[in-house]
Image (tube, rainbow, N blue to C red; front, side, top):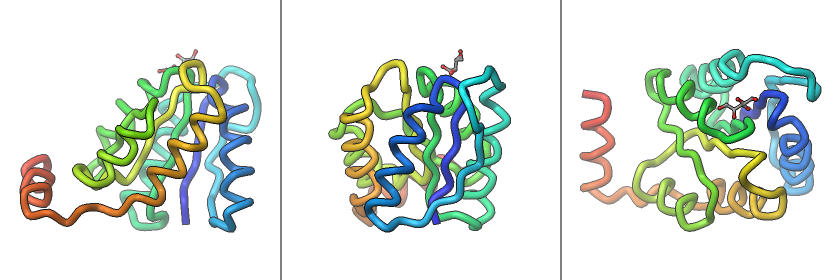
Length: 142
Ligand code: RB5
């Protein structure tokens, strides 16, 4: 199960990403928001990050205008490793190296076509399981 959430700045892109998830047959739970009316991104960032941290969802996707606010919020939640991505190289590397469980996207930065390729790359790249990366991830939580 994938958790997905956005603020008003990310709402339109979230619809595109949910369409992609449906086409791929991937189950998701939408944590809001539900329109382009102005809302506070920490509400939705905490909801998605919390669902991933609790194990209710395996991964999370967060979208706001820049992706920055959402990534700050998500990374404050214990057990969450969130990467703000605007390119496919980073999306692949952050799965292989950081085993990120949440991705943040900026809808005012990254167009829908690229954003979907980024999400596709991130969802389909496994963690490397390399000893050095396991060690470094462990050090984050110390
Ligand atoms: C909302 O205007 C904007 O601040 C928000 O979407 C996000 O970019 C925050 O980091």
